Image (cartoon, rainbow, N blue to C red; front, side):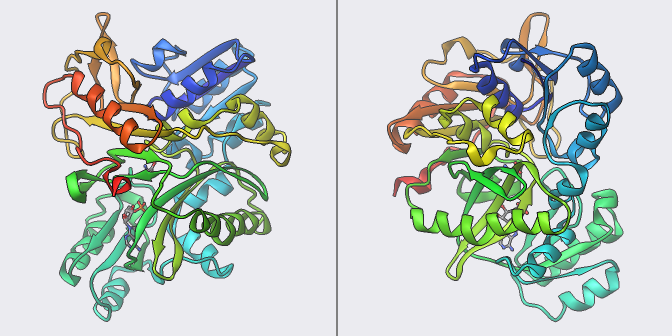
Length: 419
Ligand code: AMP
Ligand code: GLY
């Protein structure tokens, strides 16, 4: 089969890497791809928002399945666009991708169907939001309604900080239209856990859970990023809690989307807080997580293409998905300055010295035949091991073998799982 993956980050590298293992895949393309994806797929110079060009490429190359990686094109309706041209696509349609694209939509859905989440109110007017905020207590959480490259959430430690966030989002419009509405939400405490599931309508096939590290510095200090590292499984979280999350949050949400006439087909990503009162929803995403995917897919034993095909054909209920018992740890190597501005085009050395890890490229390009930096998150170094300690030791040993100017990474990825 001929497959086109849309996207160009670490997530798409992991998807291409997993698809490449399928004996059914004869041609694998990635638009636009990146410097590392080029080693497993043919990169095509089309950007993820060029729907027309993507459709034309897929038609010209008789693509059997298009797989969409990132959130932005999903929210903008890429699946509807490609399906209208007769293409087969793995990913949610626009009316289901809204579960990530609008936090107000999702909070209303969860409230309507009694699915556990933080208490909240939503606002369209800044004055109303401020008036409500002044009656609350800190810490409190402010969220821009729309997509904001993972940066639209402020966990405010004081009401002043919360009011500034409201002003930034609703008045200064630092996230543009995404700030037309806000959610003001109760602060939840507990461990965080990500569960990604393959979903077709009401059928939910959960993947193994993972934990991300969003803050840029060790001990969860500094501003939030897209994610600085992940690990799977979560040995310190009881299976009963994982099961409870699936039964009380993920399955009811898939069912609610069907009931709303918005059946979800694709990867539904639940961001959960394991509070003293049980698991609660922090957010849903409409796609594979990045860098969650870089630890989840290396543990997948079943052919990923078979799963995608089962989902697009409405046969996920007949799939038996198998996972490796091994642990996986992914350490992100980032550019100097990330998550703020950063340089690009710096040479990367030591990739050939990596011994025991898979290096997923998040932001790289090929320049004059050499791999150079081309993003904030540059590489994801993933290692497998018998347990987290072994996987972690291997990933860090290899992360240290890779060099580029200004490289930085957290040194405490997966540390919570060691105690
Ligand atoms: P999100 O972009 O919605 O995943 O939020 C980014 C991060 O903010 C999450 O991973 C949590 O660490 C934190 N966060 C979001 N909502 C809450 C909440 N209600 N209580 C505590 N932390 C939160
Ligand atoms: N790692 C979090 C996300 O993909 O949104």
